[in-house]
Image (cartoon, rainbow, N blue to C red; front, side, top):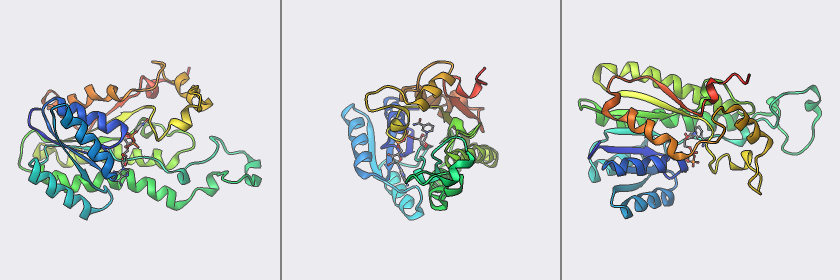
Length: 276
Ligand code: NAD
């Protein structure tokens, strides 16, 4: 791992900042990319304060020009990209239904903000598909060029366990992550002859800013959805960012040299459990 150049998108966020720090501890040179410049810079500064090598770079995973600019900075400051982690992603409230199940009377529900399947907004759905799928494809087009003709390069996408079985209420996010998992397999095959491995993690439920209000009340107790999740997670807890580190370093390192096209659930058994 030493001196590998690792580019992580969405690395100003909770999960990928933790991965960025883990790569830095392995003496990799880390490029912390995020739409939010302050968040990217903050994570890079934290890494440097601990003696690591890192740069913060503002980049929008949905804009090729922005990614080209980021790549130029990474190449100049750190060198060509060896490992790409496609971490930027998320859901949008306009692609989310208010209730898990549709009932006939919901058609007449006039409560402001109440959304059934029939109210799902194409813009919200498109936002979610773009951020998760196009936001994985475009950075790969830009940074994987550095990997062609070089050894030991690989890509790690961040899917979700909702790609295996969709979660209630979030059809767009579930479908978009299914596309990320499918693309992981497709690209693994496509790049197999030039030695670029492509894998994905499928995290289960990690308590982060994106889902905190869905899963916990203001007093810290679990919401009904939070309770359902813990009840369906055989290991009986939410994931911690640190739970992703071991599988990430394994998949991106030489010990996984014959592993490509896999989507590894990191979910405390959620996706293996039938509920009975
Ligand atoms: P987060 O919101 O903490 O981090 C996401 C980061 O992506 C943010 O810093 C945000 O600024 C950045 N971002 C958003 N749009 C961007 C864009 N257009 N270009 C560049 N950066 C952009 O979220 P997280 O929980 O750390 O999630 C990281 C990844 O893990 C996401 O792909 C998410 O879908 C996935 N995931 C999270 C969970 C969970 O429980 N938190 C579960 C499964 C999968």
